[in-house]
Length: 496
Image (cartoon, rainbow, N blue to C red; front, top):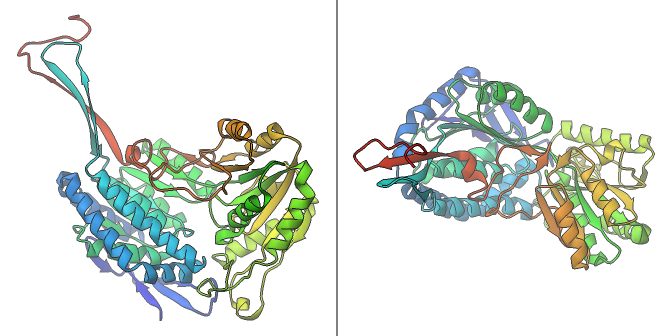
């Protein structure tokens, strides 16, 4: 049964101004429509931004612990709705059900974490150099935030941004991906049920190139948080830099796992399967490069080939499914083009490489888990983000060469190393040029209490998640306050 998703503006679910709609399909079976969705126009964005601006004053003055109580209620509601929402994530985005449930669990975790931050929005005090004078800092909200979110974590990533923005006292206009609007609407419904005042959170649906960009550059938006492709993020950075508007952009990755010759190969194999083919490779932290020591190169390739061929493709709601579909026909075409590029570049296709159409999979966007060996660092499949179930295996002769290969791309989001040697892993964690480093674990597995973000072209501005050093430093700003109670004019530095 199809859902009807409308815009959420000033506390009401409303149709777009001209009544036009688009559809969200099930990527595992495109005969099924998940949602019919209001197609926003610029006038709808104007209304949403105006509602957020009108609500800002009252929300800013709501004590942060009281704001946190609403997030606690949202977390409890999410727990009660977890199974239904997890199934919705799987149906609309395509990831297998355990991952769909994990998507919702991230939102639950973030709700409780950010709710607690309502009592920890700390400033600091410092001694003055003058008598009868004190100095302190306080955190204040930015204002109206534009949040532009992707399809691969359709509840978790909106939750990361919304909860951090709200606890700091901002109001929000959310523009979710057009591929997963029903998931975003379900999260907004939870916030409405939790008692969020009208206008504090608003949502508009439509294409990123038009509606997302119009929202981000709207005259009455104060800051922008974006997660998506490098091309879109870097375009926004250029536009917003000219407007002197803060932007946090979390973009792509070309993440790598280093496997040294003393590694636990069984453990490393599990990490590669999960990092490369979990979520069908559609994570910004997916392990798309595997840098293997030459002493174990051939044996590891064979182990990976055998293991990957045992992965079962199918709809994500089936218990026996390991790998679901990719999210759209456009994504499928892009991935298949990269597979062809790899073959033309001279890489060895070890397994996979085809669209999978057996049985009911004929109606979805399925691609076989694909492995290339003999990949050289300069090849496009080793440098460009594919965002699909495609893994490239490169050979290294030593740790230094492996680290050089990992660092030799424009991205710097996540990296991993498998080795039993603590000195080797210590050098790797020091020298890898990525925002996230994993030791004897895959490139996937970030936790919400720590910042999440990349270096180089993988991100700019403050990272997501976490407290100080992470999201709170983006969604709030520091005000410095000096109070002089001496009753006379004191001139700092001059009067010393």
